[in-house]
Image 1 (cartoon, rainbow, N blue to C red):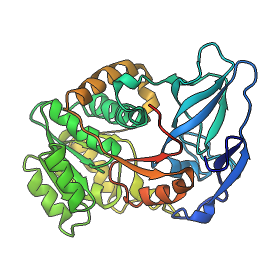
Image 2 (image 1 turned 30 degrees about the horizontal axis):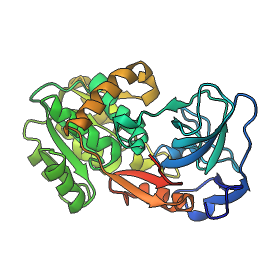
Image 3 (image 1 turned 180 degrees about the vertical axis):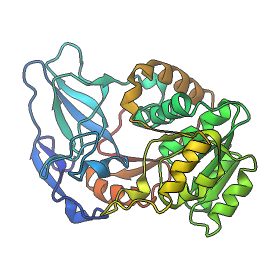
Image 4 (image 1 turned 90 degrees about the vertical axis):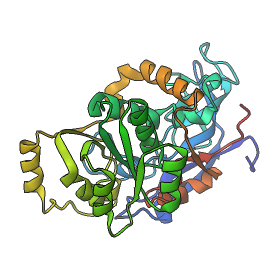
Length: 344
């Protein structure tokens, strides 16, 4: 840190955004590095994860989690080093994962702290492919999507942290993987590096026709994390008994009003006649699967069956701009902020 060891930084929610978040919706504050009390530890943030769900926490509408209060530290998961400890369960130098938010230092009583095993991979992966995004892909696809060998799995945001893992797991399970991503570079990466069977640019004016060409046998599983025009292209191609795990709707996160889709009636009719399954989920629904996930995913990463890409910005001050860009698809891979030096 540039200000010396006695100064810390945090980013708080300055105002609730209307539509797209803007820089003035965030405020950076300096504060004294806190001292841990009895049973507490001081955490120094190394990596901060930025994820689309954070847009929902900035609003005060009804959701599955409480919003960040105006003036409160922005919520987020981070990988940190234990810098001081009065807790027998944690030693100085331990690497841990916790929801400490957008700040350089935090105090914890130890509850909710998860030790990170650096032997499983770079510690940044514990908030990426071996963390919440990877587990979202694993549980949503396998527990709800249930892909069978020979079936066609489609995933939007295919070059991102969740989507890239979904397609690669589908391939491991013997399914065909078709991605949708923003731009030629991302589509080339998804096919050539990640091994998807095809990838369509969602900006292509012929998206619907090209998706149909890429899915000649229809779509059996659609992993939904976008909504909007992408879902409208997918919807007619859903096969009887198709499964749609609904993990996110990034195309709608900045909407200022909820509009019922003009094709809601046809969606309900298709749900009936094709016996479709739509299921929304939050990764914590599958907390009991964490051991299975970590065993399988770390093995796949180690064996090169699942590859990942990280998109890193430097310094806590970069978080607001990086987050605003994330909602527009500016990131290429898992969006991370390097808050402090990674000695591991």
